[in-house]
Length: 478
Ligand code: ATP
Ligand code: MN
Image: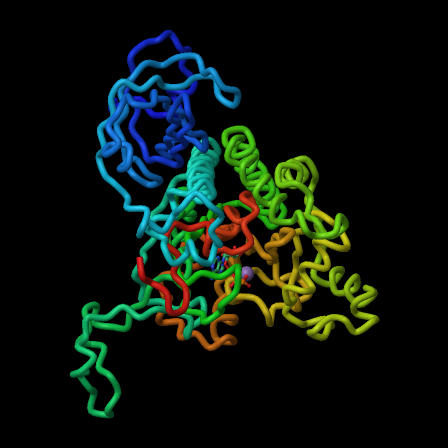
């Protein structure tokens, strides 16, 4: 349906058949014998070349064919004379849908910085780099749904607006219809949220997990894949204020099953990208190599495709938090006091510690388990010793934590104990607690930050460059 896309046309065998091509001009080049127009419609990283003879079109028309303008070209699909492409279009007619005045159109055929492109997020999908990223992002999302569908999981839509802040207050975006200039007050002078839309305080969700667990206690295996919001004021290359999270939740899965699933899942979706996004990955690999050209040989990262294949082909290293601390205590940077943060049992690993384990010590993805209870969430199942919980974090090179998950506490009394311990009012999650009262079952799950996965697969250094319209502190323009 609709016109043929350039991706399809490039795979068509040229038989001088008439053809219509629609797309945006990447470049126009005029030589003595011909005019070459490179057209792209975003269906592929490759442009189609269209060729006209000098004098075939008026100077006025040719002047409006500039980088960024949008054309409909009618002509014949012929075997290409030049190298670099198999087919090209011999132009018979050009219709200019939209011009792009080169005096003001910001995307010129030259290298633009990623920072500059973030300021023109409405146009950056028209660059090779961003269209490649967006196509890969799509392929990964498709692979996620198909992986779970094949595995007998059901896609569960958990709420975006939530009244529970069980994951930790202070990081949430408030949702309200109250008039901020005329806030209703209680007798004590506090804001009266009874008058707000939901009759209580409401926020944007930081995770679909708690509701996901309710689904798993009925459908056995569910997953969520939806937007998640965190108002953390962290200006890092790995945090967004709005990101997409994938959260499978499985009844009858113990921690080992959970780790097996997490590892198999990321390997399968990366494999899907390797098999289906070859051209785009090659393009990004070359882009990265170009970027690192001036670095000394030993500081260059391994080529993107090699890195992805390595992750797919090798088992992840699995060890406990306690074992990881021992490794860190024996490590060179610790002994030479090179770590910025202290190491010791009980610390929340900082990213320098995680990166040491993944990039220096094991040189592959790592799954850390059995963290101290004090640094993990209340819903994680207590180990027998009562000191650690059945948590698992998957750590990736260059990214750090890509997955956080655990076996969930299924024992009502232990869970309630933990709820009190961390200071959550049990009334606010009575429905969550009830799953442990009525037909409780061992179960597990995890959360994968989709953008961190896209970041890893595309090799992009900044998470703001792997989502079409990034949200971060002081930025919500587009
Ligand atoms: P981090 O320690 O890296 O801030 P977290 O421990 O707060 O992450 P979880 O609450 O475990 O993260 O969320 C599960 C996953 O969601 C993480 O493993 C990560 O991939 C992703 N994630 C968390 N916060 C963000 C964010 N602000 N932007 C993008 N992805 C995120
Ligand atoms: Mn985490």
